[in-house]
Structure formats: C-alpha cells, structure tokens
Image 1: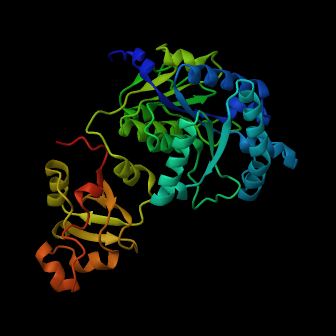
Image 2: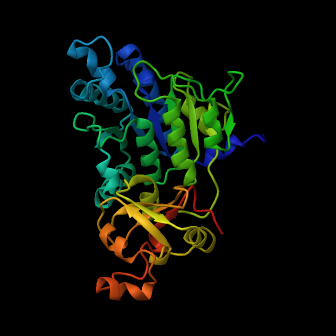
Image 3: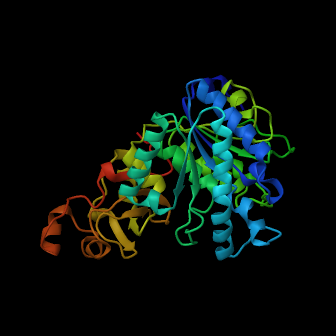
Amino acid sequence: MPAVDRTTLRGVRRLVIKIGSAVLAPKGELSPASVRQICEQVTEIIASGRQVVIVSSGAVASGFRLLGLEKPPKAIRQKQAAAAIGQPRLMAEYASCFAGDRLAVAQVLLTAEDFEKRARFLNARHTLETLLESGVVPIINENDSVSFDEIKLGDNDRLSALAASMLRADLLLMLSSVPGLLGGTKNVLSHVPDVEAARAHVRAEKSGVGTGGMGTKLDAAAIVTRVGIPAVIASGEVGRVVPRLLEGEDIGTFFEPRRGRAVDSRRRWIGLSARAQGVISIDAGAVGALRKRGASLLASGIAGCQGAFERGAVVEVRGPRSELVARGVSAYSADEIGKIRGRKAGEIARVLGYVVADEVVHRDDLLLTPLEDEP
C-alpha cells in the first residue's frame, strides 16, 4: 500500500477535533490536566491561523459520580441527570483554560433534529460560522440532558462527523485512548484508503467511560471521507498530538478521502444529516438511469414505496435487491407515489388530477450512494 504524504495536512485551515471521554475523564473523573493539555494545543494551532471546532465528550463521565453512582449509568434518566450535572463542570474547565490565552468559548448543544430539519441545520451552521469568524472556540456536545433514544445521534463520533460535513472542514481528528486502528499484527495502521475494508480489524471493545468504540469511529470516518474530508484517529495522550499531526507527522491512522465530484451543501444534508422518512423502491432500469446517466427519478421506474411520508420528505431510494442507491427529497407523498408508480410523466395529471413535478426526485435533490462519483 503506497504511503500517504501527511504533509498535505499542513494545508488544513479548519478542523473539527472530537475528544473522547476516556481522554478527558479517565476513570470517570474530569481531569483538569487533560483539559488543559487539549486547550494548549488548540491555542497553538489557532495562533497559526487555523479555525478549530471541538466536539467534546465527558459530560456524563464528569457528572455520574455526583449522583452517587460508581460507574457510568445505563438508564436514560440517570444519563440525562449525569449530563446535566457534568456539562457545566466540563464547560467551566474549558473556559478557565482558554481564558488564560484570551480565547472565548461557546457552548453549542445539539440534537439529531438540529441536523435533520433543514432550517435548524442552517441556523446551527450559521451560528458556528459566526463564532469561528469572531475568533471564538465552539465546543459542541449532544444535548444529552434532553435527548432520548428515538432522536439521539447516538455518540459524539457521529456528531463530530456531521459537524465536520456541515462546516466543510478540512479535517476530522478523533482523539481517543487508543493509538489508532490496529491491524492483524496489533500495529497501528497508518493509512486506510477504504473504510469499509478496514472494518475487518474492528473488535467490540470500548472504553469504560465512553459510549462509542472503534466501530463508531469508522462510521464517522466513512461519513466524512465520503464527502472529501480526511479523518485521523489518534491517541489524545500523545504530547502535542494535534500540532504534530498538522505538521505532517505519521501519528495515528489516516483515512483517505474519496475522490469525486464536489457535493454541495444541500445534497450533503440530504445524504448525510437528514433522517429518511420512507423508502422508494426502483427497478434495474431506473438504477442505471440514476447511476450512469445522472438522471432524475421518474415515476415510470418506481416499483413501490414504504412509509407514510409527505411531499418534501427525505427518502431512501433502493434497487431491486434492496440495495441503497441514493437518498433524495421526494416531490410526491407516499400515497401519491402509490398511485403513479410505473406511470409515464405524461400520465400523472390524469391519475392524480394535478402535477407537482415531472420527476418524483429531481437530480438536484438526489445524492447517490456510496459517493457521487459516477460519470
């Protein structure tokens, strides 16, 4: 496998750094020394002209002992209570550390709906952009004190990947208690060109105070590399790990971004952030039209649909073997599609009595899977 020239990371101007609970709160106790070490590195790279967004775990780990618990809770009510206790302690530590370098911090608590609803997605992005332009360090966490299983993003690895995509970052750096992705000989894999192939190296372990594991980190790497953003997994315990990585040192595991046509912000949202509300099943001919000709999805190629969605919903588009072909915004509701599936565009008015659009999913509202790199 050819080596990757890590010196390309010297050109990074905006990066998202995800910091795991095991780095900030080993053994379930917030470590001021660990927070200070991160802040010093962030201050150093901001001074070099870069913009940094921190996605910080550690709220639950910082708070659960104050509930009288000896280990991180599993019950959702206890998790929410621990997060409510731990989040202000975590932010106070960040604010104190950065204040010495005259850097202001901003707490940004997000939920899945802030990514899934287009208006909220844009509002969150504009807020973060404004903070960065003002020289403030945004510190993002999931709003664990109010989130519940049905709307949770799941873990901060995924949150960091969505934030990096939202902000069109140049790099996603995930700092953990592990040195990187380990290969068959237990050595750190320096370069991973294919995230999916790398999953063969993953085991189920995770740290005792975190919610994720290597699997969720690979999920995050898959999200960002799909839209052209590289990712690195490295140990947060390595001295000056962030500046050294940005100087081109071979530390941790580098996930190579996939190459292809640039994906605009709206279709990034469709493909990565929005939750699909239904499924449109298409025939083999429609699959070929989407992938090979860059066509829109017409009613004539639709075999069926699942879900009770309305017009404007984000849906999955699946082929005859149930393979995921694309995600897109449907111009018609599930009920309407049920009536016009298999029909030509010229027949829609006769069947429904009106026409919303000739296309069920327009090409501009469609993101192919796994990547928009087809000719």
